[in-house]
Length: 319
Length: 230
Image (cartoon, rainbow over all chains, first blue to last red):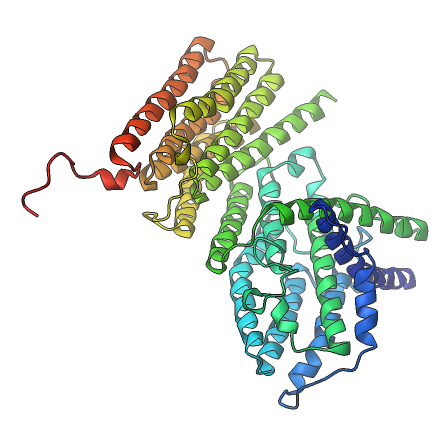
C-alpha cells in the first residue's frame, strides 16, 4: 500500500517535472525541422523560473476567480495524472477515485475556470479567446464522449487500466478498425485540445488570431507561470492517455519492483519522443485552419470516432 | 504458430479495412481535386494490400495477381492518365460551393456506413469467416459513399473518383467473397477502369476548353444561341 502511494507520487512528480521538458523538446524539434536552431530544450524551465521570480500584477477589477484559476489549472492535470496509467500498468493508490470520464470532467473543469478567468479581466482579447476555446471545446466534447463510450464498449469498462490491456490481448484486437479509428479520432482531439497547429498556432503572438493563448494574457509573475506549467502538464497528461491507454501499455512497469518503475520513466520518455516527431511533422507541414473550418476538422474527428463505434459494435473480430 | 500468423494477417486486413473507410471519408471531406485524387490513390494502395494479405492467407495466386493489377491500374495508370489528359489547372481547383456543406456530407457518409453495416448483418450471420465480417460491410460502405459523392459533387473529376471509389468498394467486398474469381474477369475490370479514366479525362478536357468550367451543375442549359425569351 505504501509502495503504491510512493509510486503514485513519483508519477505526479514525473508529470510535474517533465511537462516543461516535453514542451521544450517539441518547440526545439519544430525549429530544427524548419531549419532554425531554436531555443534549448530546457528553455521552458528557465521561463518558469523567471516568471516565479517576477512580481505579480492583478487588476483591481478582478474577482477571486482570477486569482484562484492558476492554482486550479496547475492542480487539475495532477488529479488526472493520478487516475491514469503514466508509469505502471496496474492501478495505484489514488486510481480508485475515478475512471476516464472523471478525467475528462476534471480537464473540462480547468478549461471552464480558465475561460471564466479570461472573461473576468475585462481585457477585450481575453473573452474573445475564451469564447473561441469554448467553441473548440463544445465541438470536441462529443468526440471525447464517443471515444470513451467506444472504448468502454470494447473493453467493457471505463477504467483505463482495464482498457489498455484490451488492445494488446491479440494482434487482431490491436489492428481492429475500431482501435485504429479511435486512435486517429483521439489524436485529432489532442491537437485541438492542446492548441496545436491545424486548430491553433501555439507560437503565434497575434492577439486577434489566438485561441488558447489569449486566456492567459492578463496573468503575470506567479500566475502566468502556473498557467503555463499547467498547460504543459495538461498536454503531457493527454499524451499519456493517448500513448498508454489507447495505443498500448508498452514500456510500463508491470510489477511492484521499484527498479521496474524507475526503468519505466526513460521508456515512457522515449515513447513520448517518438510521438513528438509525429507532432512536429504535422505542425510543420500543415497550416492553421481558418476559424470556421475548425468545425470541419472536429466534425471529421467526430465522424471517425462514430465509425470506430459502429465498427466495434458490428464486427465480431474486434470483440 | 500458424494460427497466430493467420490471426495477425486477419488483424492487418482489418486495419486496411479501417483505413479504406477513412480514405472514403477523406474523399467526401476534401475540397481540392488533387486531394480527392490523392485519397483515391491511397485507398487503392490499401485495397491492393488487402488483396495481398488475403491472397497470402488463403494461398490464392489469383488474389496476389489481383493486388498487382490493382497497383498497376489504379495506383500508377489512373493518376498518370489523368495527368496527361487533363489541363494542369484543373488540379488546383477547389469546390467552393458544395451542394451540401462538408460537415453534413460527412454525417451523411457516416449514416451510409451505418446503413451498410445494418444491411449486411443478416448476411454475416451465415458465415464465421472473420475476413468476410470485415470486408463485406466496409466494401458496401465504400460503394454507398462513392455513390453519394457521385451525387453530391459538382466538379467532374471528383465525380469520376466517386465512380472509381464505388468500384473500389465492390472490389474490396469481392476479394473476400469470391477469392477464386477467374483472373480474366478481374483483368477486364481493371482495364475498364483505366478506360473510364481516359474517357472522362478527355471529355473533361474538351468541356473545359469549350465551356471554361467543369462544374456539372453549371451545365444544365444549352449554350448555342442567345436565348430569346430572356
